[in-house]
Length: 153
Image (cartoon, rainbow, N blue to C red):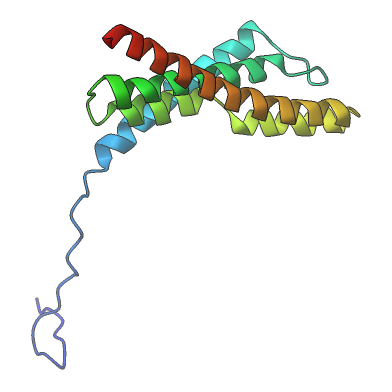
């Protein structure tokens, strides 16, 4: 067999070297695993507390609000209180909580309410979700910081 030869260099051509793995595989794996767990929990909540397509989506609002509160607690704990393994944050923060909270369902709920002739309710839901999510993460983080400082003093 004859290998192709580069006419300029007169050496056999070889495939370019593949870049080495950057170590992102474990992170992608734990985010995927956590995302599946979080999405299953969110789906379970929708089965336990179903919402009619024209009704106010209380379940999604509560899931997103609770998820944001847990984000606030979690971020304070892993940054201020505990030293955790490097895969805990991507697994739980990005994976589980990212899969549990849901921007896509939130957007579909707004569209569904508007299509069912309830634009005012859709707008109220849009604003209420944003406000409740921000307040939940802020309040949970503040309370957690206070509890940590009270415990360590």
